Each structure stands twice: as C-alpha cells, then as structure tokens.
Image (cartoon, rainbow, N blue to C red; front, side, top):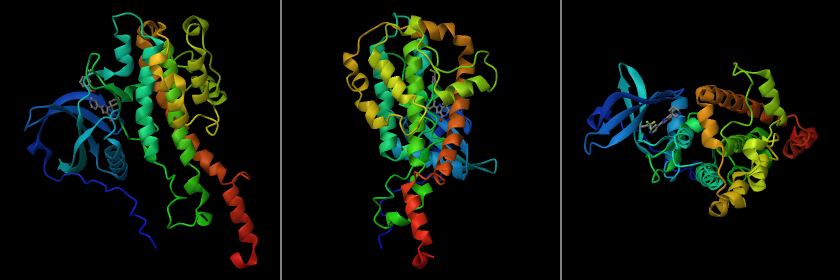
Length: 355
Ligand code: I85
C-alpha cells in the first residue's frame, strides 16, 4: 500500500520565535478582513515595509495560511514572507507577514485615472493577470471562493505595479486527483468526495465574470435597486441569470468580450466555462490584439463612488450565498439519478454477496 501522504507537498510550519525579534509592528491599519486585521510592519534587518495579517489561531486560520503559503510563489498572488505562531496577551495568534501592496485596490486605481478613458484592451490585460492567478490556484486544486474587487491589489502605484490576488480566508482544497491516487479504488470512493470539486472552482469563474463585467462598464451585472440589505429581487435575478448589457456603455464593446462574460455567468455551474477555457479564449490569450476602445468604466466608477461600499456588500452577500448553495448542490448530487458512481453503488448494494 502506498503512503497516502507521499503525494503531499511539505507543509511549512510557522516560526515560534517572537515576531518582534524580526519586525517592528505599527498601529497603521491597511485593511480589515473578516478573519483579522492587516497592519503595516517593518523588517528590523532591512527596514523594508511589509503587511502583517493577524489571525486568531484556529483550524480555519491554519487552513487559510497553509493554502495561501502553497500558492504564494505565483506572480499574481500576494507573497507570504514569513509566518509566526505567537501568544499575545495569552491569545494564540498566527502572524502572516506579506509583501506590502502599496498600489491599492484595482477599481480604485481605475477610478483615479486622469489620463483618458480605460480601454477594452486594458480590461483584457487585467483579466489576463487575474486568470493567471486563478489558473495557478485551480491547477493546484485550490478554489479561492472570495474573488472580489477588494481582494485585488497592486504592488505599487504607477505603470510598474503588478496586480495580485489576496485573502485565502474562504479558500478550499478540492480533491481532483482522488481517481489518480493509486491507494484508492475508484469504485469505493464516496460521491461526495468527487462531487463538490467542480462547483467550488466554478464559483471563482462566476466571480471572474462579474469582475470582467465591472471592468468593461463600471457597474455590476446584478444589483438591487435601492441598495437595501439582501434584496429578494436581486437574488432572483442572479439565480435566473437576468442581466443585460445596457446600450450606452456596451454598444462599442466587442461581441467577443460579451460572449466570454455570458460563458462565465452561466447559471448552471456545470455549463459554466472552466479556467482553462477562459484563459485560452482569444480575448484573454491575445489581449494585445483587443481593440483600444475607450470605455465608460472610470466615469461610471466615479459617478457610483458613494454607493461602491454597498455594491461591494452585495457582491459579498452573493459570494456567501453561492458558497452555501454549492455545498447543497453536492448534497443534492447524492440523490441525483445522474450520479453514475452512486448508481453503481446502488446496484452493488442489492447484490447478496455485497451486503
Ligand atoms: N496593502 N480585503 C479588503 C494589504 N498589502 N489586504 C484585505 N484580507 C487580506 C483588506 C480588506 C483585503 O488577507 C487584505 C488582506 C491582505 C491585504 C494586504 C496585503 C498586503 C496590503 C483583507 C495595503 C496598502 C498599503 C499601502 C497603501 C495602500 C494600501 O492595503 C493604499 F494604496 F491603499 F493606500
């Protein structure tokens, strides 16, 4: 029998020395995540600035750090420099030192632009960069499940800045290689072990579709009319895939871009495009050939500036709903007669020698 852990990459462990030996921690808050706050800190050795995320130690925090650490080598994912496990005021904490992203959030940067309109080609380039991060994750069997504008940050201001993805607080390991792992006979693998994988990854593609839509026009495809908390109308529109490409903002946008969005915002997670298909799409793969059509994006982002926090809240709520819904999809799958593996198991279980 092969060692089931033989395939697993080494899981790095946090340092247990006090972080204050190596870093000067400041009170400057860079951001507030749901799981912890992010503050500025400085390396005592080099005086270089870093971002420090403070998490209460828990299984959830450990998973976040482990998954982020594994993919931190990607050019378009925020790098982890160091992780410490320290007790602070008798509370066990995980302290994650990351490169400091000084360029701010993606859409803030587009909104702040002074030099003319954001173009379709630039939108394609941004999408290409985000897709590299998502492909890296999906190739490593990780679904991010919280892809949203606030988690897309630039390394620095100006044209040299690199766009990177952060926050692995909802990331999930998806086990695609169960069938290839030689120590299990596929006939005996429970369907729930195989089932959820597809849906978790497709959650990221839906988010990519929403981000691409906003990049091309400056407002989201789904939003409630009043900015009220959870709108039943919006929920229904998301579930039914009811969105439009309003003429004023979309008439000059290429059909290729619209078709790609339609493929990513398919309500059926099984029919939705995979990251492979998205990254191979001509509009993304050959983004340098995309027309430099001026868009309404920066103007619309500026006009909607004061409701942007509400827009973000709504995206958060729909992501939360989707994470829960897709867990139910895989539970429903156990009942589904389309589940061929389960059918085999059912047939086998009526066989006298099997029971
Ligand atoms: N640098 N979601 C929104 C930030 N460097 N930020 C958030 N989860 C995280 C904050 C709340 C993302 O895991 C977050 C996480 C990590 C960071 C992070 C990582 C590295 C930064 C929650 C900045 C920054 C630094 C200097 C200047 C500026 C921003 O946020 C700005 F340009 F905005 F002025």
